[in-house]
Length: 165
Image 1 (tube, rainbow, N blue to C red):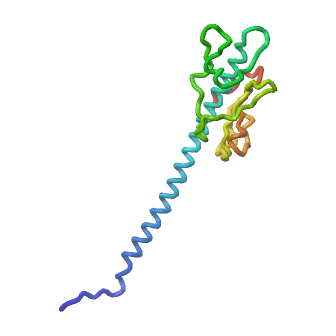
Image 2 (image 1 turned 90 degrees about the horizontal axis):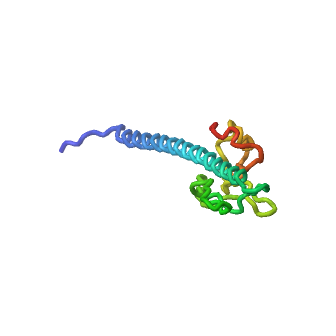
């Protein structure tokens, strides 16, 4: 009976396969991290867009108040259909979801009479973007969580820099 001689090379294929699987695992982990970062950056861009839409809607609601005394909306639904006019006045197409948290709820900046001056995300996550904001969003520079990104109406400041992204 003839038997092949194995010698010392029997385990090298197995070790090579284990090393190759380990390298593939590291590469997949790095790819996953890049993908996660790209997704978070996209959510940030969407939050900046949606927040600006809310800011502009509050601006329009405030500026189009009938009569002499300008008013802010009392709830976000007022931005969908302004009840102060006999004809339909809309400042938003829909109440957007928070792109970072995925929630329909927004943090509201309210005045003494319950009027809404601005909105912000309720997310406590740390943003990737720390600088290079549009003129309207300059106060977001260096903020440590998305909840600090407040999209607020400032009387006299109408859409300054909102097109820059």
